[in-house]
Image (cartoon, rainbow, N blue to C red; front, side, top):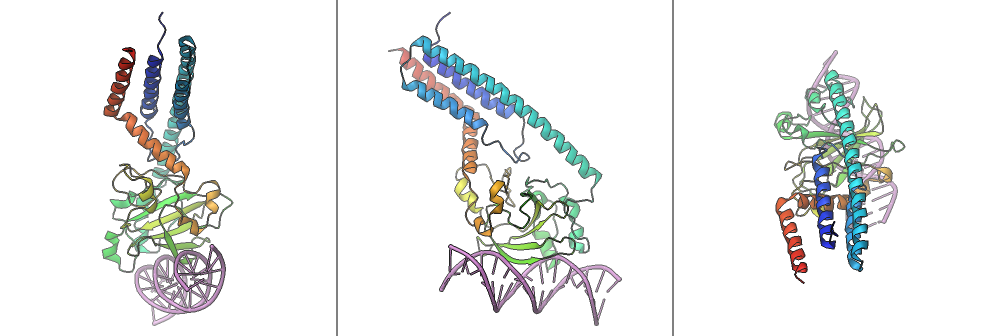
Length: 333
DNA sequence: CGTGTTTGACCAGCGC
DNA sequence: GCGCTGGTCAAACACG
């Protein structure tokens, strides 16, 4: 039995990490579109830990035996964690599938019912309600769900705008205690221009216009659900003629379309974040001006980019070539 | 003082 | 035509 060299250990560790990445992506087939709550805190930490371990170990001189022992231990630990996480993700995936099938079953049984009943008196609205029934609760934004189903709208000039205006509805769960705020933080800037108590719902409905661009025609209505007042129902009308303000800052260079609960995001998958979480739900309307780009969002974006890189075969090859080059170079000394 | 929110008044569509 | 309802306007107000 020969002693594994320091560099070989490093290659093993890195390849193990690659395995981890692919296991993370392949074994679970989790759809980002439908899994709004990413685990920000769990998985990246382990990667970080491994990286830091490598860096720290490089910093000091160890005897070969000591080194290989420590690295083997590390290797075992990482593979154990890898296994554990894979199992967790499998379980989560199963739970998710179960929930989704339950939801679909419910929707098929109650095609007429909605979480938040829409007044059926108005012709233009009532005829379109059913197309919204596949919207998902709890902030799982169906960003451009209605884009194909010429969802009508009860604007003043019915027919022309009925075809043009895109309407999408999202459901956002807020803190149960916070039943007064009608703020849905989606990264855009909104100006409230009216509030009205409607007939079917004792909770007032708030009317917002997009104030980021003066010419932006998008309007938003926010009202609490009758059945569950911790759920905000936000209805978006129209399309933004400008990018998401938070998206400009957050995703320059990324080809992932990270729309934080925004309405139309036609170029790719919509990744949805929990819009109101913990204390943030108490933020007033002014807080929508200060971008919803939290450290978690930044971290998530970095993870996405890192994941894209590790999945890129060219990048992997280049990395392998660089490492083997370094090893060969080192061995010639 | 500028900006955003609140709130009562007004308007238009719809059903009877 | 009338009343009800949802949507919008704009003056008043609050806040930094």
